[in-house]
Length: 137
Image 1 (cartoon, rainbow, N blue to C red):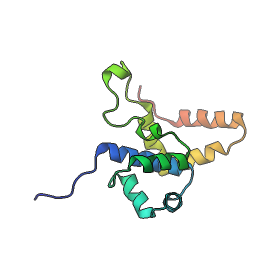
Image 2 (tube, rainbow, N blue to C red):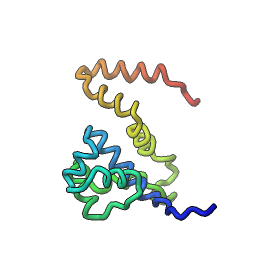
Image 3 (cartoon, rainbow, N blue to C red):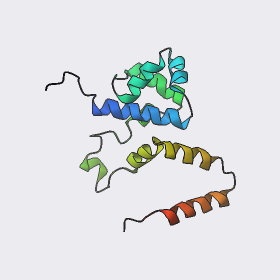
């Protein structure tokens, strides 16, 4: 069976996931971002899934609204890192951060953690998480 649906470009998917990541970090709804841009939340959904490509001027507007440079959306993009530019570096930690922050647990943990005012308590939370984590070694 041949399917006629065109697969989204990996860069468009990545840019969309970064839009979603930043929007979620700010606890902003798709509707609110859409209103700020003068478009529907359905269009935001399509951008975030990579179904629709974000144009340059629209990406600049999204970056301004979300308070990040345009380059934020391309951090750790597929095919971006070459051996020459990265040296012997392992996979970018940005990939793990983006995956974590795109998860429900990551967002909940981040939102709760930043509300802890006492630095000593934050340190103890980090120590607890490290103690509970299974090491790969």
